[in-house]
Image 1: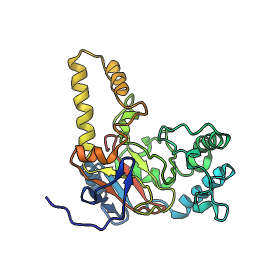
Image 2: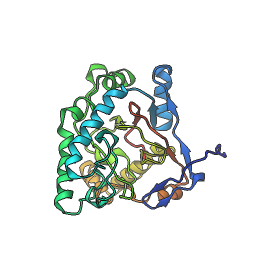
Image 3: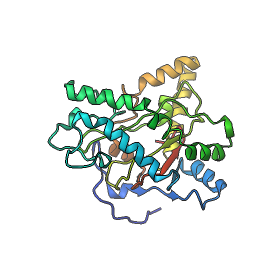
Image 4: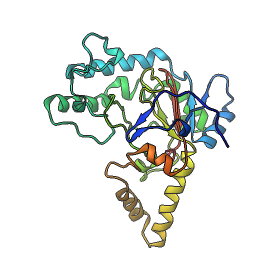
Length: 281
């Protein structure tokens, strides 16, 4: 079935420019006007639920300000700008500031080591781990959406991702790869910490990627059972068969072409939240 044409800017991933014919837009949902049953249906159908303005914009921007103020001593920010803008100082070496969560270790310079230390330390700051990750509006929505109510528990394992133009981005993955020793009922919330243009490096999803993720997991489980592996041995073997950094691939363009699926993209605003299930690619 042909898809409606959209004028996309040039969009690049780790292995080159995405084909506009293999690119689509995420479907946005308004949490204030959409019935809860419909939102549950969209997550089950699409593998994701993109909610506009779920969180107060000012609260998200406050976390953004504190994050960049924390990183400012590394020289990452253009000194002519305000920290909350998050504008890179292009006189610096971008490789000193690798994307956190991409598996890159930095350059080993004092600047790079300091940046990695501060980017990691940010995960333990109250403005992130409590004020943002456990924001009352976020928790309240999940309690209602899932039906878990007061049994809802926010995992302490989170990733505060960052990246710079030209640096390698996060590879292709689904979250259960990193949660295989737990339940697959985990619901991930991706929260843009600021406004992101369509070509600004925001999260992208593979169309019907949750179907592919479940199939990938199921195929491996079947092979493991046929080989006589125990459940624990199967989990260990699957993890070892992933790339060393836990990714399915570092080449999104090739991955999408191989599986004949579009990559779905969007611009984002501070306050937006995207939920996805454990198998969504």
